[in-house]
Image 1: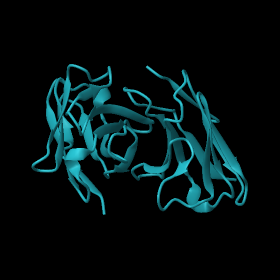
Image 2: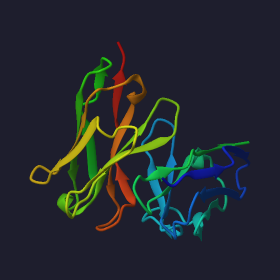
Image 3: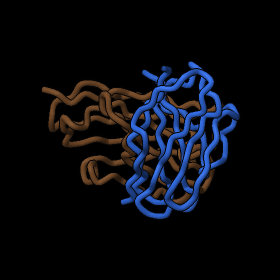
Image 4: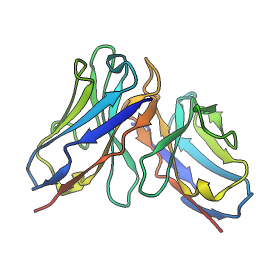
Length: 107
Length: 120
């Protein structure tokens, strides 16, 4: 199975800050990488697929990059509504696997 | 608009069974792979099972293999998860999710979830 790791596990940043979350796969997954946002008490929401493609309706302040084993999610300017836990997930092969999540809050 | 509505959760004793349902609308259900993903209280996301849209092939996490069975009824646009031999560690919110496109495993839309509690 492909293991996914994320760093940091949590972060606190100021409104307007640029925020970067990293995700690493235990083996190469090409660009079969998705990012999800989960706000407290809500279902996860798709942000990015194919490592860097923005899901329809997602603000352009979110961006993704990477290929192979190393990936990043960037929020260009943090806003209060971005408070959430962010998960990466590989879909290169079954079983699908998620990273442990990165909790983002406002400083 | 895509809608996924889960039902069937509840309180069940260890060793018991439960069947979850996910009613889908707003897309051509039969063409899309569907998955179940769960989240234990205060924990992260764990993929549980998937069923392909094309040939109905099924896939399971090791943690549920042999105990859970995923199925779909394309005539009713409904996804199911039959859960047997339930354990305390199966306690979680169970979400259904569709693939974001035909012929991809990438998850797209998610339902609101249904809570399963395994306790005596």
